Image (cartoon, rainbow, N blue to C red):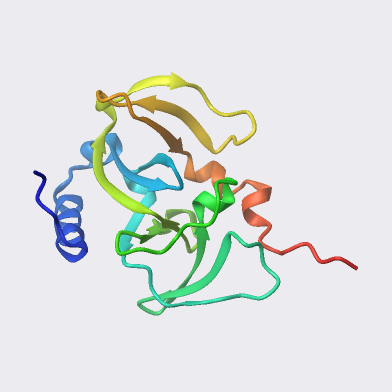
Amino acid sequence: MARHVGLREFQENLARRLANASAHDALRSRLAFEAGELLWLLRLPDAGEVMPVPWLCRVPLTQRWYNGLVNVRGALYGIVDLADFCGHGVTSRTSESAFLACGPRYGLNVGFLVRKVVGLRNADEFKPVAHANPDKLWISGVVRDHEGREYREINMASLIRDPAFLDIGAAIAR
């Protein structure tokens, strides 16, 4: 039976592994997580902090998938329900839900509400299944692990330029 690991212990272990990763390892490493019923991968340099879902401030007249703003040590981050953004329904908040703050390298403070963080994976563990999705160019490909599970790879640079992702305003009937 698998040992149950608390979120705090998981975060401390993940932070330790991130700090010890060499530059080469970081480029090959992916952070795996669940959003909706799908598994996702984010390149380690694009990932930031993983934390319990913080208190958030809703923003009126925004898309349903835009959950609002959160304060992470004095910096405001937009929180996007990735499953809902992809059309897979609203993420229920449970003890396994997490806020994944994306790395600051692109100058956009944004993060994802995810159902569960799976952990670090090496890119060498996966075999390509499909190339980029023509409808969602920010999905750089689909890969399969040795257990047959499919993961969608996020290209963060493409996602933060996607007009649908940037348009958080809700349509208002006039």
